[in-house]
Length: 581
Image (cartoon, rainbow, N blue to C red; front, side, top):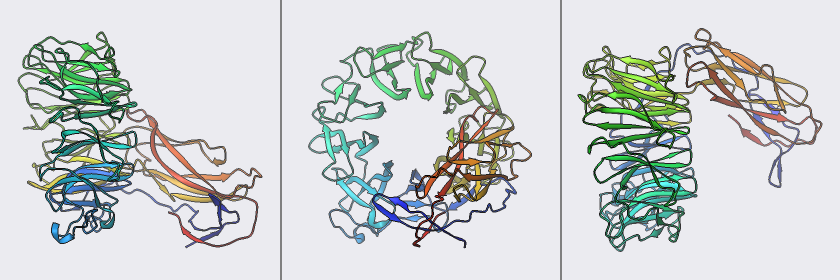
């Protein structure tokens, strides 16, 4: 253990502290001998609602709330704790974090969820990951069936649909306290049943029933009772809006007309600004699904029995709403569909009559539609590629193959960069990975280790590794070094650029990695500018951006290191031990 004497105070508010840091300022030689492999974290089932809160994974497993740090020992149920009405752990079989947790949501760095208490009523709960920090905020009328859902953060509060005997199912909000958990508006006698909550700018949109109209209508709210209003008066050409989607601060959604199936609409929150984008007028069975934003472009799937499933895109105008590519023919009506965007690119899958599935990519232009890779495996119709998920600027998904079944894959948008990451369930059955959830750089997911036996898995999805992750340097005198290495093999040459900082100088502005030297550490030397100012300790974070020829490789944050700069002016020294990773 190496200790470095600090000669200048670190200022925290009006308190001056002199610190003794535990930092190894010399780069530790390291190499990456092989690519990271997925690993089984814990044999726990079922797995639902995987949610990241401050780098910790929370999830529901049957009656219990669990947490995980990616290790077997660090994966366990949260039990004990306290509730605001004082019931004891024995009343819930040892769990005072509530039973049957649902709707796990990260709200301002705290886990919020719904659970059933000792009376059988479902309420709103919160937890910081320990038994003592898990408690009931407010109870709502109901039973084991969920009566609270749609938890959505808006304006530093949590909005949701909750049922009580007095009001029915209406819109509520909470600031995380019992007294701050209140009804927003009783829209109608009985149930207005708010659904499809979507935040667009400073407005919360949702759909609800109101009055004598027998279908859902579009509503908006600013969080107040007076500001919760119908967007457009009863309109028989816009029935049951759904798939509310934010595209560059414009709300897009689908709605039924009386006879022509679902059509594409958009809204700015005003009655005049809620307009039909395009009427397809094809068949009564026409449907629009999978609305997905890729920067300022909307992609969606149009389907009917005659044409099958088609990929379309829209810029918000009728003329700019155009056909992209057929996804599946009418002979495969149940073909699985999933879309995912990474920056301006859209990934999507295509199925043919023979059961082959293909991964495609589009940048929104005619010439920018390209095949990434085909997966020729029997029996893949209906399974598709599973859910496509963006993780650290790369695409993760489940794909079939003749030799392995459905397993975990990753793609950068090129054939060379589309690779299987592991055979989690040996044989042809496959592991069918799903519920991808990133915590820091650790990707969690559920996967089958044997037939019908699901476990929690994890994968190190970091783009690069740094050694050490923190360094300390004195102004104008010494220099320190750190090393950078990629954590994956790129499909082509990439550049890792270091964002400039006027107070911290680096020996090179960028590092070059290829398919051959990706695992070879490269060294960066740091010196601190002697500015003759008395400033105490200064803390900087040097961000590293990855760029390359692959479609997804544009200003990806590969990671950062912490640099603590010691002032060159000497003063009295007091020691206070602090550990810095």
